[in-house]
Length: 381
Image 1 (tube, rainbow, N blue to C red):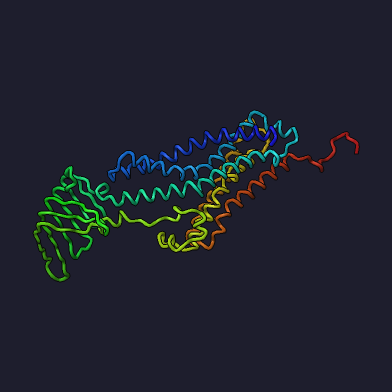
Image 2: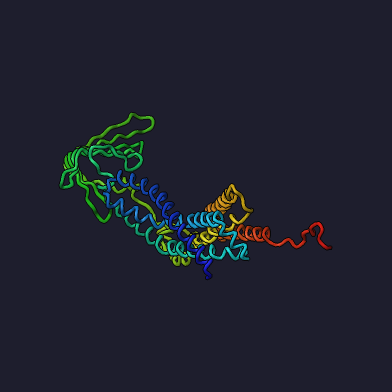
């Protein structure tokens, strides 16, 4: 690389660090706040909240880096233009194609970062996050057993606990199971204890009563009561809707997605075509980084000098980036519905490359010599 290339590349990298930090902070804080509210409501500690927010960071960085690359090249190119450095480079004989080389190198460096995240850190973080969510889902006491408040673990189920003793006993338990309108049951007990078994959590109640209201069409509802000294109840089904969740394809490595095995397909409930489409979506993601970087550079080369700046070119650059991301969203949505259309996932990168090539060609043509210009007045024919 020449000295000019290194100088422009250093400008882009400096701006990239700033924009990446700002965008990652905004996106991460937005996700962290929602995650914080959810975990705190479930009774989790601050350490669990910190762990979960840290595990979401690689996902946020992978999404933000291509946008940060675009912002860095757009801002850096605008700065070079405002300080007349681009004019000096053009006067020295550098074409727009030649000046785009540092932007391309910068985009490839960002694509390498996104590739490492998409194929390495993000699947690892998501897999670890899924494991921690499963661990917390199994901890029924931490999620749903909170004293002094009515809780609704799933639709049709109401739970109330008067007090939780230091040894884990639940004092003054009230449990209503109204999932079946024809047979509604209320359990009350002076005390209860949650037991962990291989078949799932069990609720051992002591000194209580069971009230069952059965409704039959055409007949009067009948209420039956049963008192008990001790009763064991399977509460695993009550928390099934909130606790269960299948594995996600995004938790697995790219190589495993390209060659899906029966174990992974059984855990996710996906088809081999859907797994391969997810792998191709991951392969296409880094390609948006050089496209975004070149869009931010090439669009600002259009037009001549203006004392009002290059705001028009910046607007067109933003519109082009939004168009590419719209294609990405549409292609991902289409591939999710029809996995056999996975080649569409590469369409945004191809379309963005076409826009960059057309823009650089227009910029080079507008600055090229006019060979067919008419001779000036008084000049010899």
